[in-house]
Length: 324
Image 1: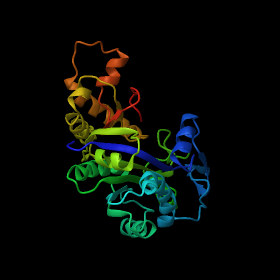
Image 2: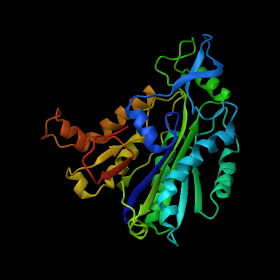
Image 3: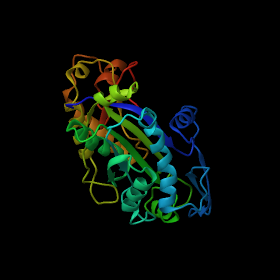
Image 4: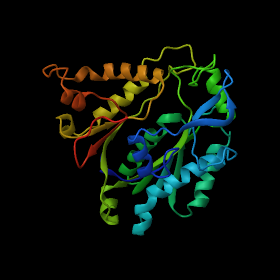
């Protein structure tokens, strides 16, 4: 990237914590937040297992529920900019949203943008939404880094929000064999539907100095790709879209990282088995550049050289394992 981009603050609102620190502590402690849905049952007559924000009433639905999860995460991420009150900092917002599906309001995208502008008046010079599902946040980061490199703005909040708790969404998951449970239409390898929101504040190097905040990490490179052979189609997914994301992200890494200096590799969560198969195929394609002189069993070798993401970040404090 032509301009240094740093991550300086985080925000989150999840079933196990109402901010980023609480959520991270709960995850490290192995707390899942799984519970029984108050009234939805599966085909075996058992309550559907879900991960729901316990402070939100189950009658809070649609846009209202998305806002209740998303806005606190955005507010947390914005804290350094608000506290510094430095004039002239141009801030943008990128929001990753679910792709169209049953139970999702058809007008969620425009109404959410309008509500953000009302809730955070005069804060954002631009608001963009990416309704493409789990990868929306990283695609938003890809666009933000490019815009920040062009000088369009000095900061950007990358946010994402999801909630699968609408009855229509839960029934759709069960009908498509994706719901984890005991009923005849359920799948032991399915997933527990949940909800939550996350946000990260990106600043250019110049903005970091103007605000006077210590960066958490630096974004070195971001890659994106779009998979054509998707789930619920007759095609076979071989991870071609993820391969494209790997290759773009790796191609943009500075030479110091390619030479094996400390760094971290991150990727979006991929709980479903079909996503795991796509990842395995993509890793096989992207690993063809690895030197054969080092032993394949080396842990350091795997950490430094195995590509496993869409976004590469440099950790300023210590080396880090690949994280999911």
